[in-house]
Amino acid sequence: MTTYAEADLPQLFPGTVNTAEGARALFADARASATIGRGAFGPIAIHHHDVVELLRDKRLRGPGMDFARVSGIPEGSRAWKRQEQILLFMEGDDHHRLRRLVSKAFTPKAVEALRPTTRATIAGLLDAVIDAGSCDAVPALCEPFPIPIICALVGIEPDRVADMSRWASSILQSLRLDAGAYLAEIEQAQAELDDYLDVLIDERRAAPRDDLLSNLILAEEEGDRLSRSELQSVVAMMLVAGTDTTRNQLSNMIHTFAEHPDQWALLRSRPDLVPNAVEEAIRWEPATEALPRVAAEPLEIGGYHVEAGSIVVLMSMSANHDTAVMADADVFDIARETPAGWHLLTFGGGIHYCLGASLARLELTEALAELSSRLPGLRPAGEAVTNPPGSVIAGYTTLPIAWG
Ligand code: HEM
Image (tube, protein in one colour):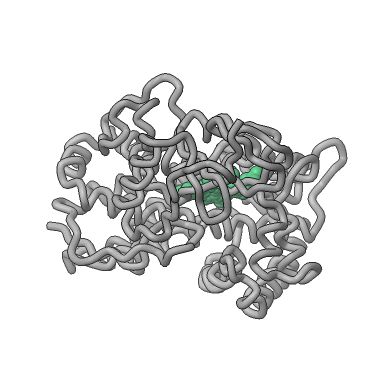
C-alpha cells in the first residue's frame, strides 16, 4: 500500500483561501480528484464517509495536551492545569467520568429553560439597531449574543455578565496556536474567575438553585462527585466551548442568508422552516471546519498508509458538502430533506461530540426566528471580513448588513 508520505495528493491549505466560497471550491476539487488531501500538519480526510468512520475509530485520539504544549502553555501552570480538566483535551476513563458527571447536570430541561433568555437577548440586540436599517452584525449582534445565555445557564448573577464577558475573551486566547504569548492575560482572567466561583460554589452548596452550577455540585455517580477545581474548570470550559463557536456560527448564518435573498424571502414566508434552516445554515457555513486528531496506531485512510503519531485532520466542512452522500450538497436549500446515511458534521461525532449541540441549536433557532421576522430584505452592505488565517473557528470580524 502507498504510504501517505510518498503519495501525490492535493495540497490543502484552507488558510490561504479567504472566503467560505473559495474554501468550498478548493475542497470540491480535492474530493473530485483524490481520496485524501495533504495539509500543513499531515493527512486531511475530505470525504463524508471517511470523516464519519474516523470520528468513531479508536486508533485516533483527540489532540490531548499536545495542543497546549505546541501553543506554548508551560506544563504545570494554572492555564495548563485548567486545560487538563477540559473535556475536549481529555481521553479514556478521565474523559468518560467527567463527561458523565457533566451530562447529568446539563440536561435537555436545563437547556430548554434558556429559551426565553435567548429570545430576549437577541431581541434586545436587534432593538438597538433596527431603526438604523443597517449595522455591522459582528459587534452589534454576534459578539454580545452568547455570554448572557451561558451566564444564565451556569447561574452567574446578572451584574457579573460584563466580568464574564471580559474573562471569556481572555481565557479564549488559550485556544490560539500562540497561546503562550498571552499567558499572563489568560492566567489573570482564570484567577479572577476562580475567585468569583469559589464564593459562588460555597453559596450554591449552602442553598442550591435551579442552575447548572448547583446541578454540577449535586451531580453524583456511585459516590463520585466533581471537586472544587473540576467545577471551576467546567465553568471555564462552558465559556471556552460555548461562546466563540456560537457567535461565529451566528455570523456565518447571517452571512449565508444575506448572500441568498431567495432563501431569506422563503424563510420569511414560511417561519415553520426555521429549525430546518438552522440545520442547513450550520451545514453550509460551519464555524468548526476541522477536527484535529492524532493517530495512536498506524492506520489506512483513503487507501494510504498513515503512520502512528501523525496528525490527522478530519475536515468536517468538506464532509458537509460531499455530493456523494447528498446529491445537491452544493446548493443552499432550507427546505431540503436530508438523505439516508447523512450525518451533519459541524458538531463533530464519536466520544467528543459537542456536549452543547442542543443549546447551540436552540440559540441559533431563536436568533433566526427573531431576525427573519424583523429584517425584511436582508442583504450585504459592504465587504465581509473573515477571521484571520489560522483561526481555530471560522467566522467574520466584520459583517456589514442592511435591511428594509
Ligand atoms: C454553534 C455552536 C457550536 C459549535 C459549532 C460547536 C462545535 C463543537 C465541536 C465540533 C466539538 C467537537 C470537537 C472535536 O471533536 O474535536 C465540540 C465539543 C464540545 N462542545 Fe461544542 N459547539 C458549539 C456550541 C457549544 C456550546 C453552546 C457548548 C456549551 C455551553 C459547547 C460545549 C462543548 C463541549 C463541552 C465540548 C467537548 C465535548 C467532549 O470533548 O466530550 N459547544 N463542539
